[in-house]
Image (cartoon, rainbow, N blue to C red; front, side):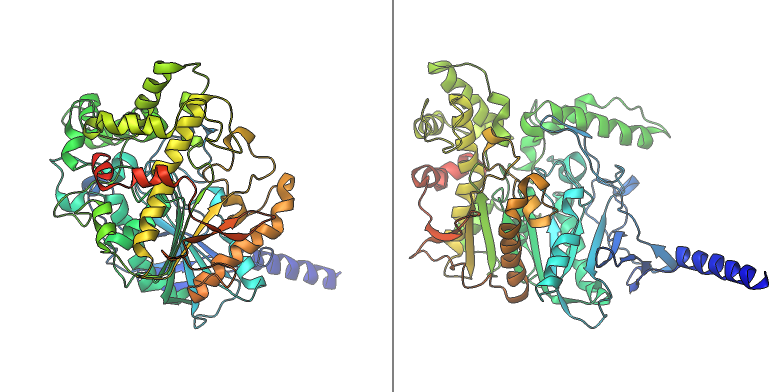
Length: 542
């Protein structure tokens, strides 16, 4: 009886100890953080580590400020920090799963490493910057779980540490006006830079090497990566990967453009109804979020704000000006696009049933709706785009042409103008200055919506996993693509199967499950050559 009681007490005590056993701990510049270790998935992870002071109260709309004080005691990093302020629904997908509550207090990062990594391991680091048109998205999105790519890195003998970051979005990250202090413009990009500095200061405590950091992003996240290449600090990273970069911005008007009647800053001021007084800050906080979310639903694809160019800010000249001048960090890069990057952004013009001059006018309206200040776009540029993307052309969007002429034209133009042309502009200028590896992703994944083709972001399940059962045929292809990236993170070279881009060979890698091969970078060249003319880039404020 006594033996049984003793065993029970030991079991209870041991069980209680296990339930409260401490996870892996790291002593950072800001405090001691405890994460979670999981033998089940083979990783240690720390979620929701703050890298900046909260951008709330008097810090709203201000450039981020580093955390100067060391917090005593153990801080738990078991779950994601807040997602940055944004709508919780999308016209494209309905309810959005952000994986965390929404708040202005949202400047957090997350770290995954192979389980039991030693502090002196010196592993290369891959930093993920999410997309979302600079207006939506978050690192806590379940799509961006770092477990899969870390486990693949271990399985192939190329272990890495994976980090994902939040940054302020829409009104809270990119508020622009002539009345804004110039040093506070583009706060969302400045958040990213603050996170990269925090990683430099602290990643060695996780077993990472701060001298071996690669930054990686998709869509606006890839545009952010390109921004750091164009305007950034060479001490923060040594390599870069860009999936469907926005070039780096879809448009980059000066701050004063946002003050014009009907533009975002003017709309914001007109919609504010808070009264002065002790409750004004609290009122304004909620009012701004509601107003911003409403304004985003009223513009094409929720594209309310973009980064802005202003003398005195670190983004001081148009991106294309720096690209043409070769004035950017000369580091190894991977950069590519999807075959149908424009389809997701063109759904608004589906099934309108227009033809002739009415269809041409609708295409003009669609193109002009993608730019913050379209007063700079001339009629001859619109006419040339209409000619480059003619009605009833079955080659537009092929092999996924839908037969809806306006949609196919808009989709083809959008993919070329905002993804393929910017990719070509950068790699053509960078080739000869640094190692450049370019790709075209052309795989239609089983289970995906067929009429959208190889659409924007459709590659992410292959790179992060898990791959849906309906697409299990893609497993080997996905691992091959992951291995290209892991080789690049380790060696700044994706391997012999991927040729370096040069302006003599102009070869890029075709990424298709049954045909990974080098192909000439000459498709849609008449269209992208036009989009990249300096005078066209100037009109489009790129």
